[in-house]
Length: 363
Ligand SMILES: NC(=O)c1ccc[n+]([C@@H]2O[C@H](COP(=O)([O-])OP(=O)(O)OC[C@H]3O[C@@H](n4cnc5c(N)ncnc54)[C@H](OP(=O)(O)O)[C@@H]3O)[C@@H](O)[C@H]2O)c1
Image (cartoon, rainbow, N blue to C red):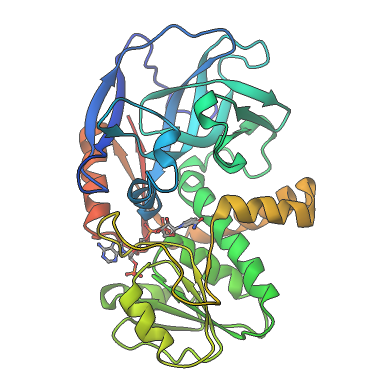
């Protein structure tokens, strides 16, 4: 097998990890074991080879109800399966168009295997068409076929699993910054997150834009050492924000209030919620010029601007370059098995992560 784990789950039980949706989210992972059902006509079973875990997945859990993330992989009450990005291999197919051993990149349940119900299939991708997923944005229902995937580089799947789902947002935000001619300063909060670091890396190639990364005191030196932002400061020492575009990954209203009070005329683009402690926080805009960024919508808009082939090529070039550029500074921690995955999830929840390390999991 090209880049798979080289082991099989045939005959083994299915492992599924879920959080208690009725409790305080994002919640602790718990194991729910599923029975393996026979495939219906048109369905495909896959073994999930590896997936990344980051604050992005915590946000999926925090917004599970409000943004529809629980709808991707429904499971009995009170459980919610947190979606994860990564790679999987077809183990069984009841769809003539898809053969066993084919490998795909996309959004999976946090589980050892998954069943898809392909609808539209072309050389590049398979679109999931289960009734409960039809209302979701295309970005969440698209599974990329590795054999014809311009981003895929065999041998670097751990790094791809981590960076690919986050860097697409960095890529889209960078284009938004470039289009905002009125702001020459870009302030990026939660600057130590991988999505923010990808944006910092792209902004280096935007002449006339000055980037300021804002992070926690404990992450300041690590972020500054990467030299991806023109300046790095902390939440205790916020920069002037006059006329700046603020790209916020933190969701920290109090800090944002202080940052915006430190100048006039800033624009706020709300992207993430890394500082949220539970799912009860307010999502409503805090000002007339604020916007809420949602990558699946921005993908649709950018594909319309560049055309599907132009979008694919531009994203693939940038993603491959960032993945290569991350090698000297980004370490990958691999965790295996339910217990280790539960521990890694707990570390994410309590914020003990490191900007220069990322987690890839497998069962
Ligand atoms: N809107 C969209 O479409 C979209 C798309 C992609 C990603 N996102 C969002 O972008 C955010 C970043 O995701 P990521 O996966 O790139 O993050 P990540 O690499 O896992 O980084 C997480 C960062 O969050 C902060 N943090 C984590 N735990 C904390 C805690 N307990 N207390 C305080 N700070 C804590 C730290 O940053 P600092 O110390 O620098 O604050 C940390 O470096 C997520 O909220 C994700 O959902 C949104």
